[in-house]
Image 1 (tube, rainbow, N blue to C red):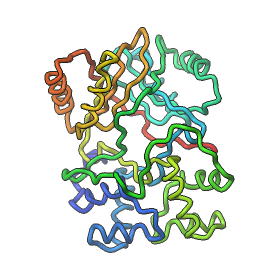
Image 2: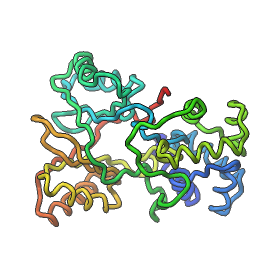
Image 3: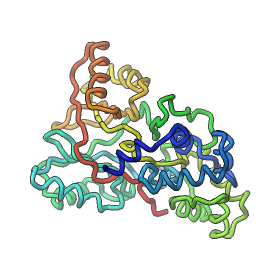
Image 4: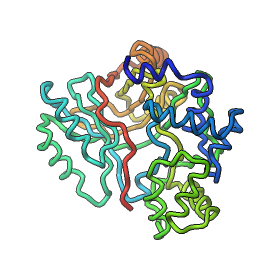
Length: 335
């Protein structure tokens, strides 16, 4: 039995509720696991033991911040390439070795390799893309920069009851698109926060001791990074396949400029849609609205898109599913 299949079978109700809290409500507090225990009605020790087991089985990947790349002097873009079928695995693995690549998938389309690239904003991106094209031996390669964000949710409902909302919670910030002024303390803290949190009663004490800071000062600095928009969310990254979200569908819509906002907001209101963006188009890829859908089956994802298409009377879209996941990690930023 595959590890992910075993993980799905062994997750109980408390595991699933804990996964939701870890993603959306991880407390920036001296004893975060004790607070999670109070929420779930279990002891701190049981919370830590359950998180350790969830990590050991590959359900939880890491507990750390999600940063707004632009505030740290980076830019993020989606790159798509056409790779010969007999070279796709080699290309996917090769590009995934780059530290500035976060997600990388083979998708079921002629344009078959898709990855996120987050380089420093100062580099010549087009020159970098030309080098990557040559390196991968791609027939076609282009990037699709984001123009507008209609929805960005970084968690998956593990309980079936709806993942708890992030609105108004201390662990979540709004998006800030500008580059932030970072003090030396900010830079040191950001570097350390990108490491996985230790599974002990007072994990932030370990960080404070390492940095020579008072614990209350460190916690306040962490909260400040969130309120300033530098950190979008502090929480767990999980393997969505481990909790039953096997299908990863990317619906790309070709929408006229006067309709894109209407459809973008409509898609954003669908629970199964995690991300929804307007992106720049080109002569090869005329689809400007992207909606990421995760479901238990491809049929489930396709049904959602087909229903929206019928309701709005618009059928100019393509649906791409991931055949292979080469990489899904949070990018480490050098600040």
